[in-house]
Image (tube, rainbow, N blue to C red; front, top):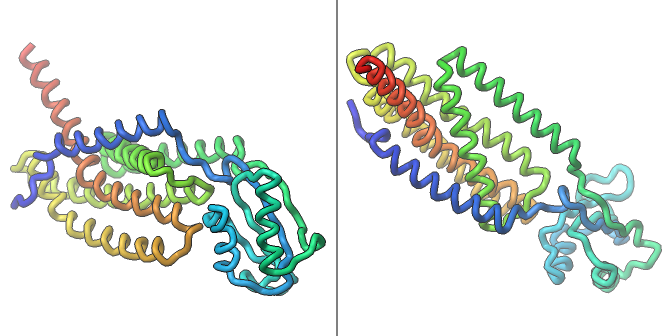
Length: 303
Protein backbone atom coordinates (compact mmCIF):
# COMPACT_ATOMS: atom_id res chain seq x y z
CA UNK A 1 0.00 0.00 0.00
CA UNK A 2 2.67 2.47 1.04
CA UNK A 3 5.25 3.94 -1.28
CA UNK A 4 6.79 7.27 -0.28
CA UNK A 5 6.76 7.70 3.50
CA UNK A 6 6.13 11.45 3.59
CA UNK A 7 5.28 11.57 7.27
CA UNK A 8 8.59 9.94 8.17
CA UNK A 9 10.36 12.95 6.63
CA UNK A 10 8.24 15.63 8.30
CA UNK A 11 11.09 16.67 10.61
CA UNK A 12 13.42 17.09 7.64
CA UNK A 13 10.75 19.15 5.87
CA UNK A 14 10.21 21.24 8.99
CA UNK A 15 13.95 21.94 9.26
CA UNK A 16 14.12 22.95 5.59
CA UNK A 17 11.13 25.30 5.94
CA UNK A 18 12.45 26.74 9.17
CA UNK A 19 15.87 27.35 7.62
CA UNK A 20 14.39 29.26 4.67
CA UNK A 21 12.07 31.23 6.96
CA UNK A 22 14.87 32.19 9.35
CA UNK A 23 17.10 33.31 6.46
CA UNK A 24 14.14 35.27 5.07
CA UNK A 25 13.38 36.93 8.40
CA UNK A 26 17.02 37.96 8.76
CA UNK A 27 16.97 39.37 5.22
CA UNK A 28 13.70 41.21 5.92
CA UNK A 29 15.19 42.68 9.11
CA UNK A 30 18.37 43.83 7.35
CA UNK A 31 17.23 44.65 3.81
CA UNK A 32 13.46 44.93 4.10
CA UNK A 33 11.42 44.64 0.90
CA UNK A 34 12.23 46.32 -2.41
CA UNK A 35 9.00 48.31 -2.70
CA UNK A 36 8.26 49.67 -6.15
CA UNK A 37 6.80 53.00 -7.17
CA UNK A 38 3.24 51.78 -6.64
CA UNK A 39 4.06 51.83 -2.93
CA UNK A 40 6.74 54.49 -2.66
CA UNK A 41 5.78 56.88 -5.45
CA UNK A 42 8.06 58.00 -8.26
CA UNK A 43 8.35 60.13 -11.39
CA UNK A 44 5.89 60.29 -14.28
CA UNK A 45 7.04 61.42 -17.74
CA UNK A 46 4.35 62.05 -20.37
CA UNK A 47 5.83 62.85 -23.78
CA UNK A 48 4.38 63.30 -27.26
CA UNK A 49 6.67 61.56 -29.74
CA UNK A 50 4.75 62.58 -32.86
CA UNK A 51 4.58 59.08 -34.29
CA UNK A 52 3.71 55.56 -33.29
CA UNK A 53 6.52 53.65 -31.64
CA UNK A 54 7.50 50.28 -30.25
CA UNK A 55 7.77 49.79 -26.52
CA UNK A 56 11.22 48.28 -27.04
CA UNK A 57 12.43 51.59 -28.53
CA UNK A 58 11.45 53.46 -25.37
CA UNK A 59 12.84 50.77 -23.12
CA UNK A 60 16.19 50.84 -24.96
CA UNK A 61 16.53 54.55 -24.18
CA UNK A 62 15.58 54.02 -20.53
CA UNK A 63 18.09 51.16 -20.30
CA UNK A 64 20.88 53.71 -20.79
CA UNK A 65 19.87 55.13 -17.41
CA UNK A 66 19.26 51.78 -15.70
CA UNK A 67 15.48 52.23 -15.86
CA UNK A 68 14.55 49.44 -18.28
CA UNK A 69 12.08 48.02 -15.71
CA UNK A 70 9.90 51.14 -15.74
CA UNK A 71 6.19 51.01 -16.52
CA UNK A 72 5.53 52.16 -20.10
CA UNK A 73 2.13 52.96 -21.61
CA UNK A 74 1.27 54.14 -25.11
CA UNK A 75 -1.54 56.71 -25.31
CA UNK A 76 -2.64 59.27 -27.88
CA UNK A 77 -5.48 60.17 -30.18
CA UNK A 78 -8.89 58.84 -29.26
CA UNK A 79 -9.62 55.64 -31.12
CA UNK A 80 -6.06 54.42 -31.19
CA UNK A 81 -5.54 51.13 -29.41
CA UNK A 82 -2.89 50.36 -26.82
CA UNK A 83 0.49 50.44 -28.53
CA UNK A 84 -0.69 52.65 -31.44
CA UNK A 85 -0.63 56.06 -29.75
CA UNK A 86 1.96 58.75 -30.41
CA UNK A 87 2.35 59.63 -26.72
CA UNK A 88 4.19 57.68 -24.08
CA UNK A 89 3.65 57.66 -20.31
CA UNK A 90 6.63 56.44 -18.30
CA UNK A 91 6.31 55.71 -14.60
CA UNK A 92 9.62 55.12 -12.90
CA UNK A 93 11.49 55.64 -9.63
CA UNK A 94 11.87 59.15 -8.24
CA UNK A 95 14.33 61.12 -10.36
CA UNK A 96 16.25 64.30 -9.65
CA UNK A 97 15.78 67.27 -11.94
CA UNK A 98 19.06 66.69 -13.78
CA UNK A 99 18.22 63.02 -14.30
CA UNK A 100 14.84 63.92 -15.77
CA UNK A 101 16.44 66.42 -18.13
CA UNK A 102 18.98 63.85 -19.31
CA UNK A 103 16.22 61.35 -20.10
CA UNK A 104 14.12 63.96 -21.89
CA UNK A 105 17.23 64.97 -23.84
CA UNK A 106 17.69 61.39 -24.98
CA UNK A 107 14.09 61.31 -26.25
CA UNK A 108 14.58 64.65 -27.99
CA UNK A 109 17.60 63.24 -29.84
CA UNK A 110 15.63 60.17 -30.94
CA UNK A 111 12.30 61.78 -31.89
CA UNK A 112 13.17 65.48 -32.22
CA UNK A 113 10.44 66.49 -29.78
CA UNK A 114 10.08 70.10 -28.63
CA UNK A 115 9.25 71.58 -25.25
CA UNK A 116 5.59 71.68 -26.31
CA UNK A 117 5.68 67.90 -26.62
CA UNK A 118 6.62 67.52 -22.94
CA UNK A 119 3.10 67.12 -21.56
CA UNK A 120 3.80 66.16 -17.98
CA UNK A 121 6.86 65.72 -15.80
CA UNK A 122 6.25 65.36 -12.08
CA UNK A 123 6.85 63.32 -8.99
CA UNK A 124 3.80 61.41 -7.72
CA UNK A 125 2.83 59.55 -4.57
CA UNK A 126 2.31 55.80 -4.32
CA UNK A 127 -0.90 54.56 -5.88
CA UNK A 128 -1.25 52.03 -3.09
CA UNK A 129 -1.97 54.13 -0.05
CA UNK A 130 -2.43 53.26 3.58
CA UNK A 131 -6.18 52.91 3.19
CA UNK A 132 -5.89 50.45 0.30
CA UNK A 133 -3.27 48.46 2.18
CA UNK A 134 -5.59 48.27 5.17
CA UNK A 135 -8.48 47.16 2.95
CA UNK A 136 -6.32 44.43 1.40
CA UNK A 137 -5.36 43.23 4.88
CA UNK A 138 -8.99 42.99 5.98
CA UNK A 139 -9.92 41.23 2.74
CA UNK A 140 -7.22 38.60 3.35
CA UNK A 141 -8.31 38.22 6.98
CA UNK A 142 -11.97 37.73 6.02
CA UNK A 143 -10.98 35.25 3.30
CA UNK A 144 -8.85 33.35 5.83
CA UNK A 145 -11.71 33.18 8.34
CA UNK A 146 -14.03 32.02 5.55
CA UNK A 147 -11.60 29.24 4.59
CA UNK A 148 -11.32 28.16 8.24
CA UNK A 149 -15.11 28.00 8.52
CA UNK A 150 -15.52 26.10 5.23
CA UNK A 151 -12.77 23.54 5.92
CA UNK A 152 -14.02 23.06 9.49
CA UNK A 153 -17.55 22.33 8.25
CA UNK A 154 -16.45 20.08 5.41
CA UNK A 155 -13.59 18.35 7.25
CA UNK A 156 -12.64 19.34 10.80
CA UNK A 157 -11.06 22.24 12.67
CA UNK A 158 -7.60 20.63 12.78
CA UNK A 159 -7.60 20.38 9.00
CA UNK A 160 -8.54 24.07 8.74
CA UNK A 161 -5.73 25.28 11.01
CA UNK A 162 -3.21 23.05 9.23
CA UNK A 163 -4.28 24.45 5.85
CA UNK A 164 -4.01 28.07 7.04
CA UNK A 165 -0.59 27.35 8.56
CA UNK A 166 0.52 26.07 5.14
CA UNK A 167 -0.72 29.31 3.52
CA UNK A 168 1.18 31.41 6.06
CA UNK A 169 4.24 29.27 5.32
CA UNK A 170 3.88 30.03 1.59
CA UNK A 171 3.50 33.76 2.22
CA UNK A 172 6.60 33.90 4.42
CA UNK A 173 8.62 31.92 1.85
CA UNK A 174 7.48 34.32 -0.88
CA UNK A 175 8.46 37.41 1.13
CA UNK A 176 11.77 35.79 2.04
CA UNK A 177 12.67 35.12 -1.61
CA UNK A 178 11.66 38.64 -2.69
CA UNK A 179 13.72 40.14 0.14
CA UNK A 180 16.77 37.96 -0.51
CA UNK A 181 16.88 38.64 -4.24
CA UNK A 182 15.68 42.26 -3.98
CA UNK A 183 12.82 41.68 -6.43
CA UNK A 184 10.67 44.77 -6.83
CA UNK A 185 7.19 44.67 -5.30
CA UNK A 186 4.37 46.58 -7.01
CA UNK A 187 0.59 46.36 -7.14
CA UNK A 188 0.52 43.06 -9.15
CA UNK A 189 2.21 41.45 -6.14
CA UNK A 190 -1.09 41.66 -4.22
CA UNK A 191 -2.84 39.80 -7.06
CA UNK A 192 -0.02 37.24 -7.05
CA UNK A 193 -0.54 36.57 -3.32
CA UNK A 194 -4.27 35.95 -3.84
CA UNK A 195 -3.51 33.65 -6.79
CA UNK A 196 -0.96 31.71 -4.75
CA UNK A 197 -3.42 31.35 -1.86
CA UNK A 198 -6.01 29.89 -4.21
CA UNK A 199 -3.52 27.52 -5.85
CA UNK A 200 -2.04 26.31 -2.56
CA UNK A 201 -5.35 25.79 -0.76
CA UNK A 202 -6.69 23.84 -3.73
CA UNK A 203 -3.74 21.42 -3.59
CA UNK A 204 -4.14 21.06 0.16
CA UNK A 205 -7.87 20.39 -0.04
CA UNK A 206 -7.29 17.63 -2.60
CA UNK A 207 -4.96 15.85 -0.15
CA UNK A 208 -7.30 16.41 2.81
CA UNK A 209 -10.22 15.03 0.82
CA UNK A 210 -8.31 11.81 0.19
CA UNK A 211 -7.39 11.59 3.88
CA UNK A 212 -11.02 12.02 4.90
CA UNK A 213 -12.20 9.31 2.50
CA UNK A 214 -9.42 6.92 3.48
CA UNK A 215 -10.15 7.41 7.18
CA UNK A 216 -13.57 5.91 6.46
CA UNK A 217 -12.35 3.09 4.22
CA UNK A 218 -9.08 2.08 5.94
CA UNK A 219 -10.12 1.83 9.58
CA UNK A 220 -7.71 -1.02 10.35
CA UNK A 221 -4.72 1.23 9.56
CA UNK A 222 -3.24 3.95 11.76
CA UNK A 223 -3.73 7.58 10.76
CA UNK A 224 -0.05 7.97 9.83
CA UNK A 225 -0.31 5.15 7.30
CA UNK A 226 -3.55 6.62 6.01
CA UNK A 227 -1.97 10.05 5.51
CA UNK A 228 1.03 8.54 3.74
CA UNK A 229 -1.28 6.53 1.47
CA UNK A 230 -3.44 9.59 0.74
CA UNK A 231 -0.42 11.68 -0.21
CA UNK A 232 0.85 8.90 -2.47
CA UNK A 233 -2.55 8.87 -4.18
CA UNK A 234 -2.36 12.60 -4.95
CA UNK A 235 1.37 13.34 -5.27
CA UNK A 236 1.62 12.49 -8.97
CA UNK A 237 -1.40 14.68 -9.76
CA UNK A 238 0.04 17.56 -7.70
CA UNK A 239 3.49 17.35 -9.28
CA UNK A 240 2.13 17.03 -12.84
CA UNK A 241 -0.13 20.05 -12.34
CA UNK A 242 2.71 22.08 -10.87
CA UNK A 243 5.19 21.15 -13.60
CA UNK A 244 2.82 22.13 -16.40
CA UNK A 245 2.03 25.39 -14.59
CA UNK A 246 5.73 26.11 -14.07
CA UNK A 247 6.44 25.51 -17.76
CA UNK A 248 3.88 28.14 -18.75
CA UNK A 249 5.09 30.58 -16.10
CA UNK A 250 8.72 30.07 -17.13
CA UNK A 251 7.84 30.88 -20.73
CA UNK A 252 6.03 34.03 -19.59
CA UNK A 253 8.99 35.01 -17.42
CA UNK A 254 11.42 34.67 -20.33
CA UNK A 255 9.30 36.11 -23.14
CA UNK A 256 6.68 38.19 -21.32
CA UNK A 257 8.77 41.32 -20.91
CA UNK A 258 10.53 42.98 -18.00
CA UNK A 259 7.45 44.60 -16.34
CA UNK A 260 5.79 41.19 -15.95
CA UNK A 261 8.77 39.49 -14.36
CA UNK A 262 8.18 40.41 -10.69
CA UNK A 263 4.57 39.18 -10.95
CA UNK A 264 5.60 35.96 -12.71
CA UNK A 265 8.46 35.45 -10.24
CA UNK A 266 5.96 35.61 -7.37
CA UNK A 267 3.78 33.00 -9.07
CA UNK A 268 6.78 30.75 -9.72
CA UNK A 269 7.81 30.85 -6.07
CA UNK A 270 4.20 30.43 -4.95
CA UNK A 271 3.51 27.38 -7.12
CA UNK A 272 6.67 25.62 -5.90
CA UNK A 273 6.06 26.55 -2.27
CA UNK A 274 2.33 25.76 -2.50
CA UNK A 275 2.95 22.28 -3.90
CA UNK A 276 5.60 21.64 -1.26
CA UNK A 277 3.43 22.87 1.62
CA UNK A 278 0.36 20.87 0.55
CA UNK A 279 2.44 17.68 0.74
CA UNK A 280 5.06 18.34 3.40
CA UNK A 281 3.51 20.98 5.68
CA UNK A 282 -0.29 20.79 5.92
CA UNK A 283 -0.76 17.03 6.29
CA UNK A 284 2.29 16.52 8.56
CA UNK A 285 0.97 19.32 10.80
CA UNK A 286 -2.34 17.48 11.09
CA UNK A 287 -0.49 14.27 12.00
CA UNK A 288 1.61 16.12 14.58
CA UNK A 289 -1.58 17.53 16.13
CA UNK A 290 -3.09 14.02 16.25
CA UNK A 291 0.11 12.71 17.88
CA UNK A 292 -0.09 15.43 20.50
CA UNK A 293 -3.74 14.62 21.25
CA UNK A 294 -2.98 10.91 21.63
CA UNK A 295 -0.01 11.66 23.86
CA UNK A 296 -2.16 13.95 26.00
CA UNK A 297 -4.90 11.30 26.34
CA UNK A 298 -2.30 8.67 27.23
CA UNK A 299 -0.82 10.82 29.98
CA UNK A 300 -4.31 11.58 31.31
CA UNK A 301 -5.11 7.86 31.54
CA UNK A 302 -1.79 7.10 33.24
CA UNK A 303 -2.44 9.86 35.77
